[in-house]
Image 1 (tube, rainbow, N blue to C red):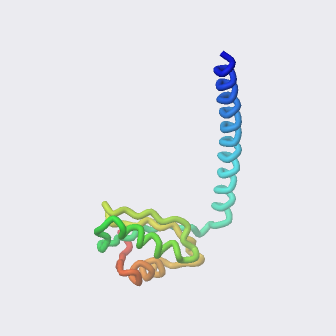
Image 2 (spheres, rainbow, N blue to C red):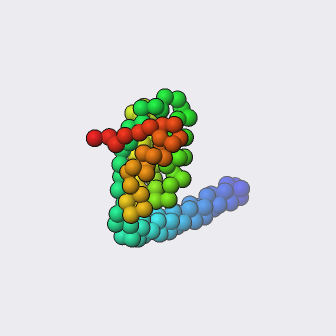
Image 3 (cartoon, rainbow, N blue to C red):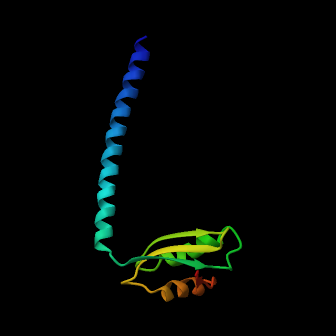
Length: 113
């Protein structure tokens, strides 16, 4: 009986701490995103067609080549659609820079229209 009470107590304490840290992390991250958005007004997103992606490692290679560029914030690649969605700072990069990065790594790309 004592063991059950101790276990329940530990679970309750763990839930309290996990919930409070979750709330703290949630609200602090929300504020960080807002600040980042306000500072970077020139954030753009572009979808690139990369027809040369045919195996499972190709999207990772393309993603890695784009992430090396200063100004790239986020890269999502899909082998199914053979596309890469890039979020970047247009003050630091042009679309041509993104295309050159993929092409230089053996994956020529074009802007999806």
